[in-house]
Length: 248
Image (cartoon, rainbow, N blue to C red; front, side):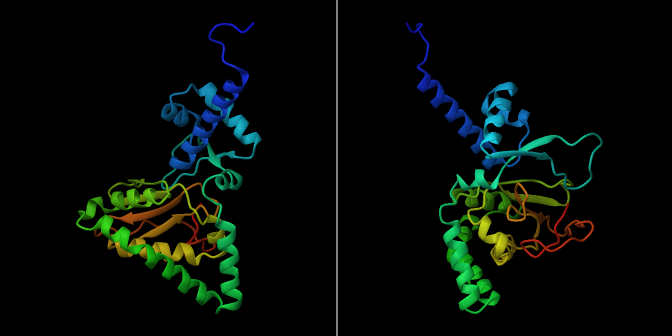
């Protein structure tokens, strides 16, 4: 006989799946996260978070990696963070990514090569431009990055703005989800057009520091404060999506 208050096994399994999905969604919305980060955001114990992360890792939804540090590295061992794998990202709004990749390949092969892809990428951004310009219309310069992040989030990019490692230099625009990441990995023109558009919207030169398409956990764009140059990117590496040097 079932004890009073004992949940059926099916309900327990459903609750586990629901919490597991919350863990994965939190990583999507906030980027690579430590166990402590997740526990604090979700109101769970760290032991519970680790259990769900182990299950998600076994399903190839998340993976553990060393935390990336932009700017001056502090002493001590970098914290371990958990990020979504490609498989994990596929569960969130990637239904049409393969179709987009096939279409872009066809354009490149039959419609005019790489220049045609660039023209398509810019036209795609132009078609979306009106809503973003409206979202930033009348916003003070110091609040424009934040306003852009909110507009991007409304379109599914899970974006946020935050201070750069040296706040006096500027801000970082972080996009924790990219609906076209697989296509952008093959066709960086998509990232380049987006970066150009950000610069136009914000009225300043911006620098793409990291991209999901390159394998980073978050697309990160540096937005300098008025009159401040972008920070040095460090030793040059092969150009990544967005046409900027890839940073370590």
